[in-house]
Length: 198
Picture 1 (tube, helix red, strand yellow):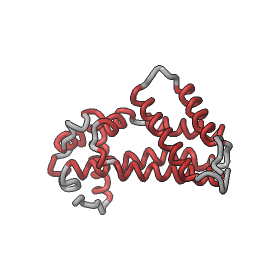
Picture 2 (cartoon, one colour):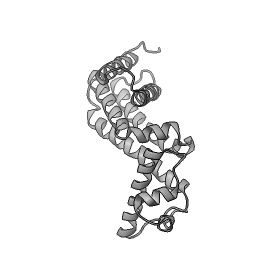
Picture 3 (cartoon, one colour):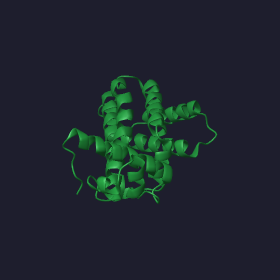
Picture 4 (cartoon, one colour):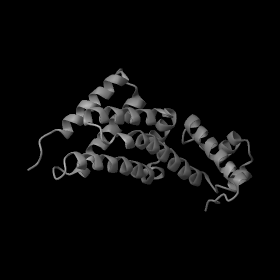
């Protein structure tokens, strides 16, 4: 069980360890992520690290929680004040916010997506998706109340935008960013404006 820091000095030490863990994970990958490397990166002894994290699993849980929470904060902060905008303005801003959040630490994103076992991230990633989907549902319900389920449409849009944005950031195809934003905007606006179910 991880020791909860109660004093400022302890909180600073936890932040130091977490920052070092993030650096090691991004640089060395999951297979080489061990507490001794993290301790070296933080400039502390392994014993000092073990006062706060009993093993690498506990540290990874915190790293994934922080990573996905920060990503979600970046996206939702960019969208929260734009929910009154029409789709042709909101969607490109949403795509830009998502791409910027994913690009913020693309090397860590690659390790998280391709190497870290999913069970470390799944709860935190689900919470991130839920935050964005809730914003989308509120937006869609406000624009077309009583029509197709805003919850379903929001899930579809968020899932599509996430998958395509992650692929673009990690694969870097020969598609300029502005062209990707334009294409995803067309995709989402056409879907939102499609025929309604009676």
